[in-house]
Picture: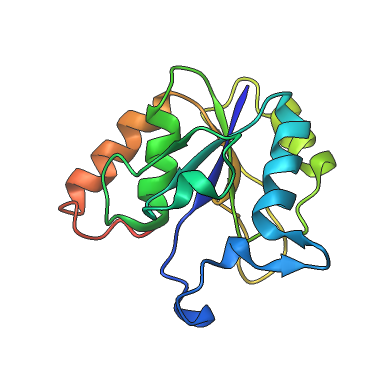
Amino acid sequence: MRGAVLAGGAASRYGGRPKGLLAIGDRRILDRVADAVAAATGAPPLLVANAPDASSWRPDLHTIPDARPGLGSLGGIYTAVAADAEPVLCVAWDMPFVTAALLRALVAGSEGYDAFLPESDSRRGLEPLCGVYGPACAKAIERQLAAAGEGGGGG
């Protein structure tokens, strides 16, 4: 299975600074997330990012922009899913404490499902920005975007 780090968002709460480039302790959030995804999948993840300088953030990662810009987190998930014909483990870049163990459990449990997401008893429940999406999700996302008039989506 391949992995993808979704580096989106306007960083409005961070004064416009890309939140994944902030450090927690001595490591950037992006590095923590990318390394956890790589440990779970066995390969460096794809970086989905629209910033003009995104490819310089982690030159060892292949960086691609959203296939359909302006659609928020759903656009990032769509880009990762549509990039290849195999399932993808998607993780948002603002999850500095996500563990490789959790991501490995998601990968292991995802077989036979089109989407496999962690769920908690928190107010949020399902976490769509930390999950496995199969190739069939591309068509489902396209239908959702079409129904929403491609103007919202937002995730």
